[in-house]
Length: 346
Ligand code: 3MF
Ligand code: MG
Image (tube, rainbow, N blue to C red; front, top):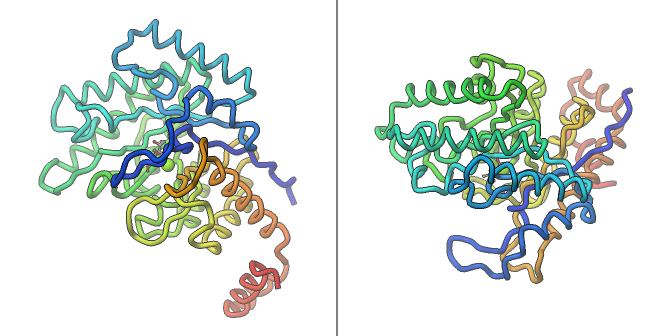
């Protein structure tokens, strides 16, 4: 058996939230962004995931020199804190130019904005030393089917992937699929769609996926199977572990908090594939509860990390020979009971 992986954990500063939801104002004082960097190591995290404007606030109004200057400041903070920038993602869902999507917008000026912003994001990734950009294609979809030419939209997404690969000869592109929210239907709803784009691109080795538990569940799919599919293609670059209680808004609940067995199976699939042995991070995309007191609120992050590690211990202490024998005998009733007993510790 190969050496057990020692996991490295990451999250994005947006996970230390101010407690806003669409039905009310913030419930905590804003926590200064720069002070978030100082929290990571103490919480057990060494990777940091960025949106481009987490690194360079207000980047739409800055010139290339200003962008590089601010990126260098952040790079120094990261090295002083012993943090690794895992990726930088262009935030293409805030600006007025992106109300109807960026790369797939019907308006040429909006598409030009999206491409300009993407180039800036790649410049920032390079400047802080991140090896990848992540595309969560938030508004690349539609609210009504007739609004866009979907076939053209797919072509535009592929053209964008190729343009990114051409713009920087080394950068990796990780696509984070999500089936809906904020759009009614997104053009890249599952990891299968993302991997199809990878294979259709000019350099499939640099196009990979990031799978978020809640996003897979919102697509009605099993997150562990989605991860296994990406792993089978050697295309699982990162994960956003969290949880989701049924088909509703994207909840970003603590990992394992809604379906512990499904969480166990995600851990099992990752462990079986040796995920993490090449430095891949266990990313957590979890939101705190609005009811939680204090500031900054970080318990959801440490709790999700802890639950992940407990499930790793559960997987490692499983009687693997017994599981193999029950598979062989095709006694899945007994296998299920074996798993449940093990999870319950009885
Ligand atoms: C939305 C998400 C996003 C992405 C992030 C990084 C705000 O449902 O999951 O979080 O994870 O943009 O790509
Ligand atoms: Mg996410």
